[in-house]
Every structure is written in structure tokens, then in C-alpha cells.
Image (cartoon, rainbow, N blue to C red; front, side, top):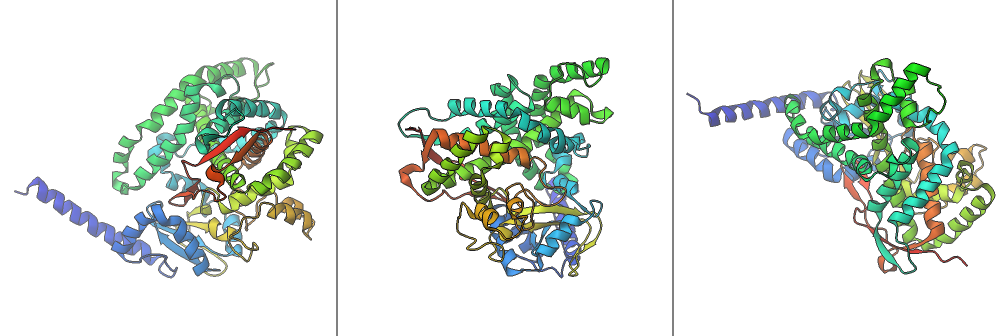
Length: 506
């Protein structure tokens, strides 16, 4: 009679043979697309894990090696085990224009975040929060700029050093708190946006979701249910937020049912907008709470990382501080702390855009998963089930698009807006504008819908900090601390310190 050890050994052998068979079957469909890394079962399996630590370099290497073509990389972060990267401006445009029932943005998100495991029944739920961000939130924030400004002032006073001597501060750690408070001042208002427990959950939830997704990627499809045993933190944190939001959501729903959706005194905030956009089956505490969490997921860390990158860049390049301050003081003097004022700060906009061009938060963009076979005009075919994307890090450092692309030029884009020969240059080179040569926010109809709020929020924070604080790197260094990469994602050096002191104005 076979022992338990023998049965497990046999099962392991069968599993490996099955995986080997499936690997060559899947790879055969894309064998004509060149590979960065190994094409063999063992080699590609090893390289798929290397992608976690070296993905950023592999993507960039492939971009310049296979210009005008496509290439593939083995990775554990897609269901097919391969990530196909397109390296041509025309291919990016075709990727953008492809129908959603052929190349799907939603399926890419489900795949990369392993939402069926991490979010359970909410994995395929209607994404009505996207319409909320695109429409009422984007329309409302200009009229709420005074509240946003107030929260920036209060949170900076609380989290940044307040004295005449230089004091070192953990930049990213404190900026996350400032961004969370400021964003939620618009989302849920006072006093909840300042509640320490509520904010900590919102700040930590993103980290736990990403960790849970990467754990889920390690499990074969047949064992995905086992992975759910590691996901209880995500669900328990969501339940805690329901306790904060539940009474408010229920009160709004009850009043809407009694008086209609336009009753006097109805707050204009994220909860009301989500209720307005929610299909009937989603008008409940759980579904509204999950959408608040998802919007915070998209807003807090991406915004704080962008601001961290920019402040590290300006601290390392003090020659930019004076011209930025001069622009800020002039514009605020004429237009105040308003969205219109933020829009007129061309140099600040340019500095932020340049910082994100070289730093950014991801090395790939415009990710889509093929639902059906898709063939580009140059003959490259993406078979159904495969994930395709563009290399943002390659595009952003391509000398065909940018002069001296590896060098930091903080006013690169403001000069392009001011000196361009095309009448659309002042619009095209704004940070929020979509363009196949600048992919920070993606491209096409699935580009980040919250970019208008996020960019204006970052501008207001950057302006407040530079106008009220002197900043520099420790030891007067002029070298930005090296960022940290995980798979295709990038973040500033997590422990980076910046010295602050209150600015002395003559």
C-alpha cells in the first residue's frame, strides 16, 4: 500500500509534468514574439519570479532592443505566465482604440490584483465608482478648494516640522497621512477625515491588497481557494470601515427613499455621489463602503508617491525653488488658492510632470487582457488570454520623443508649452493631458479618471510646502535616493529623509 509520502511524490510529479505541458502549449501561441529571458520551462519559471525584482530593467531593456516591435517576458503576475510589451507609437494607439470586448482593461485589473481571490464577490461587481470619479467628483472639487486648502494647512502643521532649525522628517510616511486627510476631506468630510483609526485603515488597505494579490499569484489556479485563507486582513479592514460609514449611508438611503434624492441639506460628498450612481442592487452599506475603499486605494498611495518623488527632486535641485516660488506667489496673489490658480502654474506643472516622467509609479501602462485574438496592423497577434501593455519607462526615456531623455529638466514641459509651434502645445504638454509619449495616467478611455483632482491636489500641497518651508536633503546632497522596484511598480526610497524648517519670509 502506497505511503502518504509516495502519494505526495506522485502528485508532485504529475503536477510538474502538467505544468510543463501547459507551459509549452501556452508558449506555442506566442512563439513568434521574441523573449526577454528564457523560453524553456525551467528557465522561464525561474525568470517569472525574477520579474518581481528585475521587472523594471527587463521591460526597459526589451523596449530598446525591440523598438517598433513587441516582446514578451515570463512573469507570475499574469494568468498566462507571459507579459507582452508593444514598442511602437502606432501599436500603442491601436491598443488604446481596441474594443473592450477584445482587449479588456477590467480583465487586466482582475488578473493583476487577483480580485476573485482578494475581493471575492466584489471582483466582478459593477464599477460604478469610476463614473463617480469621472463626473461629480471632478466637477465638485474646484468649488471645494477652500476645504482642500484648509486640510492641507492643518495636516502640514501637524505632520511637518514646525521650527526655525533644520529637522529631519521621514518624507513618504508623513505625506501619506497628509494626502489621506486631504483626499478624505473631499470624500467624507469632517470629522471623519481626521479620525486616526479610519485613516489608518485607508492608508494600510492598499498595502494589504497588493500583498494579498502577490500571494495569490504564487498559487496555481487549482489552489486559488487555499490562497483565500491568507486574505482575511483585507475583508476585516473593510468591515471596520463599514462601522464608520454605515450610519451615514443608511441615513442617506432612508432620506432618499422618503424625500427623493434632492432633499434640503443633502451633503455633496463621495457617499452621496456613490448612492446616486449605484444600481439598485448596490445601494447598501457594504457596496458603498467597498467603493469608498477602492477610490481611496486609487488615490492615496499614487498621489503620495507622486508628491514624494517631486519633493525629493526639488530638495536635490535647490536651483528650482526660487523660480517655482516666484510663480506660485504671483499666481496666488492674482487668483488665490483656486483650481484656476493651480492651472496657471505652468512651471510647477512641468516640474511635477518631469519628476513623474523619470520617477513615476510604474514601468508599464495601458495594460489590456485579450478576450479574443487581436492583431495589430504590423501583423503581431495577441492571442486570447494573454496580457499586453506598453513600456512607459521606455517611452519616457526615448530620445525619439525627448531631448537628452535621461537628464532631469524641470521646466522641459513648460518650455514646450510656451515655445511650441503647434496651437495645441499649451494643452498637450499639461500633466493631465493624454499622449502616447507620456503614459503616467495611461491612455485612452480607461486612463485614470481621477487625474484632474490628483494633479491639482499635488500642486496645492507642493505650493503650500515650498511657500512655507525650506527643504533640503541630508548633508546638502544633490542626489535623489534611489527608488525601489517591485515587479513593474516603482516607489521612492521608502526611508528617504528630508530636512525641513519653517521658511523665513522677509
